[in-house]
Length: 440
Image 1 (tube, one colour):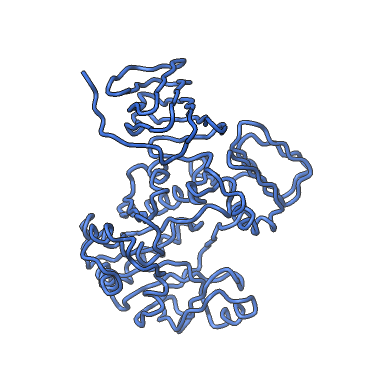
Image 2 (tube, helix red, strand yellow):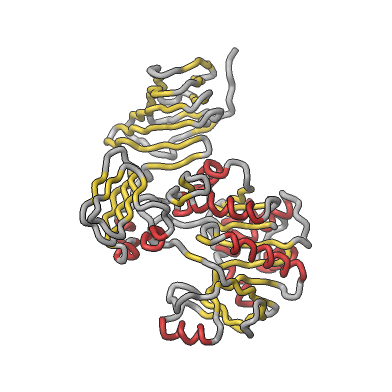
């Protein structure tokens, strides 16, 4: 299978664990096969490769999520990066051009597009294999996966098929309805629209060149910001006459709120948490280094991270977004391709950060114009390069870097460093990268 996973999201509905850097698909609270916690993107990748070990997975995403993807999946997947957000049609076209021009995927090969974060069983990905086969057979220009509803939902769009057969031509599409209208749709054999499409690569490239002005992948990437914002549903799906749907009867959940997210958690408590025996239907996730004690809590979700603390009734937690909009601030934790960082303290003229570097990884060789930095090595072995001069560092070593100084840290083992930034104007944009040049 060739699968394009769409990875976006602003990280508001699962605040404070999610933010504009770490969207819900990267939160590690799901129970993995070996008992370790895993994220949704790790779970989905594991399921895809369980069903099809030869699957070629490409994640289409924005710049902010690249480091998180590489941290959690390393180099197991291809990553197609949007220079800026332009909605789903340009994003999918960019990924299709990437497959054709960079990965040399033949135009005759089928391609599946689906969200990066469905909470499903392996049977869902078996259905995607069948969907890929339908696309390859070419009886319709596009094949969709329709989810058989378990209740009349107001949260999803609907696909109305011509028949209730396993594979049917599509009659029409319906926007998110009210409950009474949804009941009528179900009587017609309607299916939830799970946002899963399959087609031959040539079909999508043809549509891309019809609606977007570009020559190839490099040209589209270079002029991406000039492309019009338009959804894939509106640009392609709703306009296509030759379209069929495959009925999927298995389990499918959209973990879009804390209420639904906690249903998938393998434990009621993650982190330093104590729940006494009077607590009922309460889930707690604690990423802080201080304990949380819960007593007499009923149907609650409690989440604590460096970004903040949520204490909510589960039903009320679905209404979190407008409140989080008012709380928008700097992300206090992020996973990067080289490790992770946690903001410990922010003052007017300083910021203190804990940096954890994975073995064999390094920071970019860089400098800052408006701030000094001081590193204190807490654990691990590695080396620093300061203005081209390299030396080893070990626990207890302190390294001072004045503004303008080029520097990097290279980890031999896992390295933990406390970084103190000092200056009047501390911001993420004050960073200039350089090619590494070590003096003999």
